[in-house]
Each structure stands twice: as C-alpha cells, then as structure tokens.
Image (tube, rainbow, N blue to C red; front, side, top):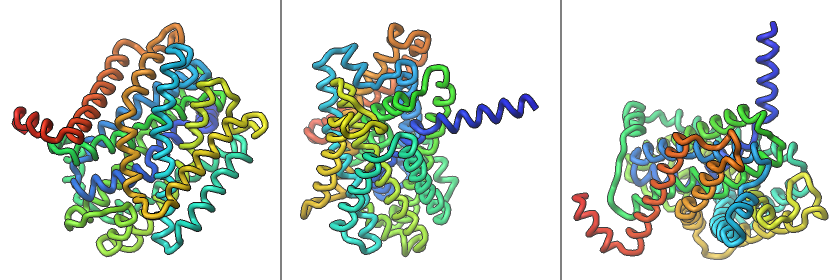
Length: 424
C-alpha cells in the first residue's frame, strides 16, 4: 500500500510539473514545421526520416540543457547571457531571436490562414479573429490557466498520427529509411535538411522552455520530473513529424505530385488517401498554428525583458509589465499584418523562417552549453564531461550543415567544384 501511495504521489507531482517540456516540444512542430516536413516528404520521400531522427535526439539534449538550467538557476537564458557574457553578446542574441521570431510568428498566422482557407474561410476574417483571441487570452489569463489551453492544443497534433495510419504506408521501407543515412549534394536537399533541423530545434524554443520552467517555479529538487516532461515532449515531436513525412511521402512523392503550399498537401491527400486524412491534416495544421501563435511572441517577450531587466510573466498585469505585454502585442500585430499583406507567399514565409532558424541556432546553442558547463552557475548540476562532448559534437554538426547551406546557396559553382572533388 505504501508503494502504491508513493506511486500516486509521484504521478500527481509529475502531472503538476508537466507542461514546459511538452508544450515547447509540440510547439516546435508549428505551421512552418508542418510545411517543411510536408515538403520533405513530397520532394524526397522517406529520405529525410533519418535527418529527423537525429535532430529529435539533438532536440532532447538541447531541451534538457535549457530546462535543467532554468530549474537550477530560476532564471531565463537571456538573463544568464547578459550576466556571464555582457551586454554586447546579449544584444547579439536578442537580435538573432527577433530576426527568427518575426518571420516565424508570421508563419504561424499564415498556417492559421491556410487551414481556414481549406474550409472556405477567408484569411481576412480568420487571421484578425485568431490574433485577437491569442492576444486576449494571454493578457487576461494567469500561467496555470493558459498552460491548460496550451496542453489542450497539443492534443490536436494526434490528427497527424491518425492520418498516417489511415494511409497505411509500406512500414518495412519506412522503418529502414528511418535508420539509414541519405544525402543528396544539392542546395535544395541541404536547405530542406537544415529546415528540418531548424524547425525541430529552434532558437526560441530554448529561450521559452527555460523561462517557462522558471516562471512555473520548478526547482532543482523537482527537476527529475521535468526531465521526463522534456523527454516525453521530444518523443512526441519526433512521432508527429515522422507521420507528416510518411503521409506526404506515401501519397504525394510516390505519385509525383509537387506542392507549393502546405494547403496543397492537405488538398492533394484527399483523392489519394481519402477525405478524412485530408481533413485531419488540415485540423492538425490549425491546432499547431494556434499553439505556436501563443508561444512564439511569448518566448520573444520573455527573452527580451529578461535580457534588459524589465518585469515579465503571464501572471502579471499590463500595468506591472508594460514592456512584456507591449512587445507581445507588437509581434502579434506584425505577424498577422504580414500574412494579410497582398500577394505575399505564405508558404515561402513558412519555409524561409525554418531555414533562418537553422542558420541562427548554432550561436544560441554555444551560449547554452557554455552556461550549463559553468559549475559556478550550475553547481553539481553542471554538464558532465561526457555530456559536454555530446553537446559540442551536435553543435559542431549544426554549424557545418549551416556553412554547407550558405556555400551551396551563395556560391553554387564553388559548391559544385567541392562536391566533384569529393566524388559526390
């Protein structure tokens, strides 16, 4: 009976602490992420599944570092960057975050617009209503209530798993591709590979999870539960992205159907996989876009206010934290406004934002690993030498991929010569 009682207590405590890891990981599969995964499946079949598998492991490592740092220090990432590396590096990090997040916030509202347009509702109605709802809920709710809304939106992602099962792909081929590295020496393949990594592991995600852990009051004593919160979130991030790639590869790629928008992917699925798979794909896009439309502006507002010492937090009032809520409002207005701009390609905004995330991620990871390795900050919770080696290896790999993408895009002739020299 004592064992049963202890198990119940631990389970209650886990669900009380659960939230930051799961929400951040699910929000990583946002509208831009869905567009990137759908494009990867439609253009390269199952070839990107191995890249997704590796990037999901890297996600678990990165989120664990951020959550552990937040629990041990009780402070956000930007706050620690300012203290340990100075104002100039903090300004650099915030500039990186703003560049990535303005485009990514716009991509979330473009996802909302796309999902409603599939059901025949104009973006000029859906986007303003969604933007107003997102703004109002965060302004009026405390952290505990808004977290329940976030967790409810996470449930909508299950629609991708269901649609993938309905399609019934060749599972033996899928599983083999998941553990077999594949590479094509061209700019488009590299751009999608970096995009897959950039949407799985995002700069804003690292800032948000650390701030959320701190804002929720999680301490080092309770960190073992947050650890599993992070691992569960990383697993479901991989699982949902896996089924998106599988669904589009099994239908669009094998039939030679190209897509220009994520909406095209949902519509194209209908004659190939049935109307229910198409509707589930669209419904998942709406839920993903709404969740990330909440999280993206929040992560930016948290980070900037922590960096420069302004009051912040969902549970505070507008009068207590005017800069926090003012920045949050500005990002929503700009993001929604870009989507309503005439003749602007929503799909290109989505894909471009994910590539920008991939390019800007390495500097943020360097800050994270250096902070988590600092025993003066982390004490006994600092990275072990073995963990540090793993963290630096995956940071180095991301830097190499980013440089390869830049060379192949900016200097394609130089890239072709390099590939020929290597025999690729």
